[in-house]
Length: 342
Image (tube, rainbow, N blue to C red; front, side, top):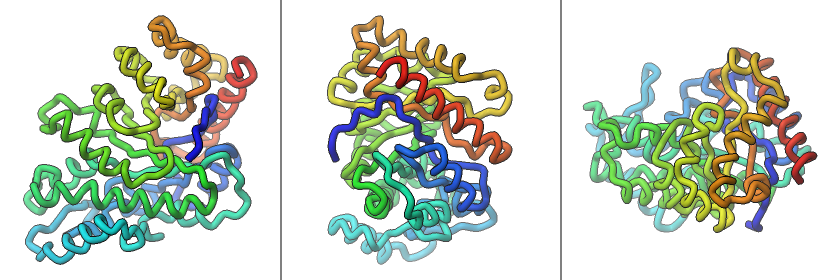
């Protein structure tokens, strides 16, 4: 994929409150001309919950009563063998994402009126998925020697299949790996070493041939994620601007290797949205960038190698009107930044 300096173009994380994929795609294509995203619709079905959505065909997968778990009483040898064979042979068509699990993705793939600079997809990360999904004894499967090793293999195949399909819309693809659980790194909730986290993420990233990003919507140990092979770091700038600025040397190294920062500057909360305007969000974004400029990172570089996003997914919003407001603020802010600095 060619190097792209996005210049603070707008895009979104992925989830939306819609139950109708047509309506969700309509909003996306109306506002996000340059980097549209397929909408994840968790209110439509539990299968579109971010943890269930990419679980399809994992050995022993059970979806029942709004819960996902792995049934270890099943004979898992054959499905595990099939998964590893597909992984080793890069047979991504063996592990597609079906319409039952991602109606928004399949509706998006059917659109014919798009000509974007790039197209964005997303997938749950191996740390968050492997620690949230448990076996029938309620033990996180990432701590299982056999199942834990299978987690990034399945997600890598799912990401590669998704990317292949998105290339039908644009040859330039971006796949975000969403890792909300990384906000708990360092606590008793995450008994994983730094090296293991990097290994798990890079296993998934190796299946992505276009640009790959990692999104964490809380405070985390950012140098771990910056040390992966990711091309984009996506963070909740609105609520946690200081968290990334604590690591200016690591961020400078990341940017100097042509990395991109996705600034999650528009809040995904109605009360906060009501208090904001394009002008106030611009001020907030510039304040978030200021600590980096004081540490020898040029402001123009931050602008050139930046994306603008909401702080996190939009499924938490009450209705479609709130989503439209987020997208309107986001696109107008991007235009304002470009007019002043590009």
